Image 1 (cartoon, rainbow, N blue to C red):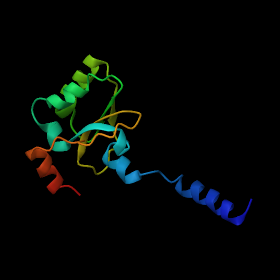
Image 2 (spheres, rainbow, N blue to C red; image 1 turned 135 degrees about the vertical axis):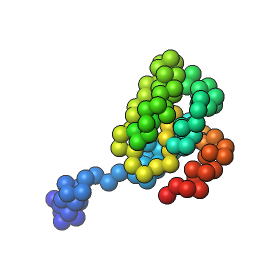
Image 3 (cartoon, rainbow, N blue to C red; image 1 turned 180 degrees about the vertical axis):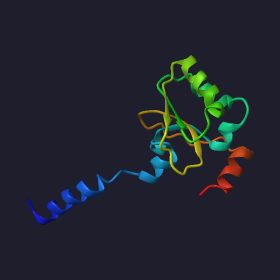
Length: 131
């Protein structure tokens, strides 16, 4: 084993393997952007009721719902109930970190959605005040 390989193995042992697109995955609750069908900001998840666009996309049972675990249950429980109703699995992302995203509906394959967000006033407010 050459010195470069030894150094690489040692570095991975100490720091862990480098993660592909780590910032992107942090923002989208562990998902790559190209797999996101639709996402809501934290503020949008707090909004009373549900976004019809999300409910409509939940009818595709090939998707998975990811929820920012830093949000209180009562802010997203309606989405969990809707996902359960349609047989869409969900994950509460407990280690969400610092992200303005509160909910992600994603595939395990690339979907390349052009419009990932519902760009209403709440979205604009959250984007202005994030990061």
